[in-house]
Amino acid sequence: MNCTIKKNLLSEGKTKKIYTTNNPFEVLIHHTDNITALNGLKKNILQNKGVLNNEITALIFQFLNSCGIKTHFIQKINNREQLCHKVDMIALEFVVRNIVAGSMSKRLGVKEGVHLYNPIFEIFYKNDKLKDPLINDHHAVFLEILSYEELRIIYSMTSKINHFIKKYFLDKNIILVDFKIEFGKNYKNEILLSDEISPDTCRFWDKETMKKLDKDSFRMGSKEKVFDIYMDILKRLNVS
Ligand code: TMP
Image (cartoon, rainbow, N blue to C red; front, side, top):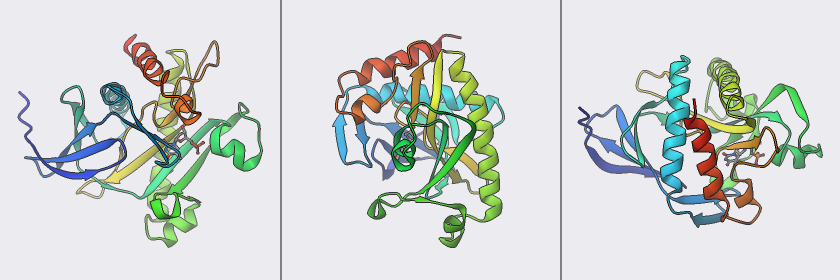
């Protein structure tokens, strides 16, 4: 029997609300229908997007837990909420690129679609005022966000996560182009994969048609097709 009691709003991000529970080491994460892009400059509401992302994220984190990756995810509680280990979020976004797209394509003038046989990892400093700049390991250590040893642990986890989910998606005819992940530390100071993995935080292309199956259609101007695309991803993940 599930006896989690939702208590107070602890924090609110662009697409999620975090609530305390009766257990001081656990939180409830609530997925809203907000959809944002371009660092929050573009915002809208897409009815029931939170339901889809809650389900998609839950499936992916369950899979990663079963692969032995330490994550914050405990269980899905209802349509919009999941129970997670409470962590202090690390102020970095880790981006993994398997194929050139998005900001890397623009920044380096490389055509979208070039395959990277060695995946490229990038880190971005989560700081709204500075618009989340791209930084390197030495900056992260200088800013006292992490130690070199903690970065080593995170890169090792990131590499395993990429290995597992690239194959997981490919089995569903989805190419994982790139994605963003975040980590947090629990009360024992252990590093856990946290936040979410969903079409909001990944670039997916259909393996047969190369059609974009993610938030890029919203980034490029339309929210109309986004719900159908997210629904398509969920359907594919539910087929074993
Ligand atoms: P980018 O090409 O815009 O840098 O994005 C790389 C990947 O990271 C892409 O899958 C989208 C994801 N991402 C986020 O989830 N949140 C963000 O704030 C950014 C900048 C990227």
